Length: 561
Image (cartoon, rainbow, N blue to C red; front, side, top):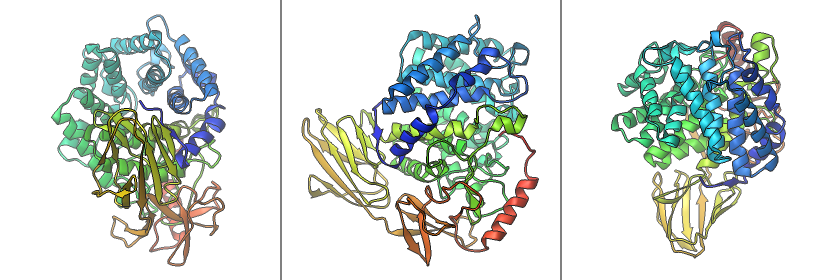
């Protein structure tokens, strides 16, 4: 993997997140449930170690931060010490294992360890630890044992999402038992309510798959996509691509986020067609955004389609950065609701404290998951394979033999300098708003929506200048209700209740309204700092009232996901 160092808006978010969040985490607290095996209240403390450490590993790899690396090393050592003689890593006591969020928590522990092994420390003992933990689970779950669909929450979706971890172990070890267990999970269909893979292949909409729980479901499809990357299977590929297209068409908001229906914004619910309303629950769980980004990254690998990277860019610069507090310490759980006026950004609270009365270090699933989206941006910004070196993001960055300067996506120009000592092909994403391309001063013809391939001679330094058309574009709402959103290049614009927003990088006037980038709007993160993305019918008070009434009647208080 190329060690891309982002230096623009996402890179700055990584810097703040590392300094003010990831270096301040109490990692011993996160390991404590595994050490004590005392999670007896059906809570999900077990997910936080893996979610946080997975992001911290990625950030340590891409930034090279030695202090963060040391914290991660210690966190991994603490978790590995918690395993029992049989290899089990679990926060649940033996008599409660496989219930509640146990398998879900084991999944995230495995994902954190696997990423640590792959990016930071190829110590065979780490991989052995992962394998033994997986082997132990296979003594409990599978044919003739407990059915994976009977393990925990959301009708089997949560437990089945461990699929991707087993695919990774198969990729790393070549051990067929891990592939076989992955295929077992796939054969069970991941939900007691029906096989989500077969239903998606048959054209079912995302909201009709399983119980509609968005990011658990998407994690299951991600595992199927990862197996398809290792062992080409036309049927599996068709299924994961159909799911991608269905989610994109029916669920993703103009900001690139998704999820609604309940008070936390966590279900597929035909969200693309309901995003202007105030009576469909909260909008846009950050965990959904991060998981959607990871899924898109897998689809990008499978299809080599730059339009997938277009969608990732939209999610990164709007839904993801818009969910992060300016100082990098906290994330919102649900994004501003309603988007048609009166919504505000509110940082997530201590999820376990709120739900169970036992505060747990200020942790929330979205606070833990948000940084993962930043890691994904670093991963896909510049990639390399047999096709050449591919540039997917244009913000300032440094990568191997490649540098991008400028201030994209705020300034409509990016300059790429490529000086690889080998003969290569430089491939560039061509978004719809790309205006012109010049290679070493000469204009280059291109077609949007496909990668532009530029030959590079060994040892030479090529300069590519990209100019973009950042004219304001009006986006009609998919529901036909007459609302309009405004986009400038990849950035969704919003109206902030303050009018002028200090620190905003974009300041535009549209129809007499003062607009700024969505990521900056509402960044006081308090109820009196509202914002509007969809402009049209209704008014702020009416939209807010509809939303408030829905929240009162939506889901049981204290429910997690």
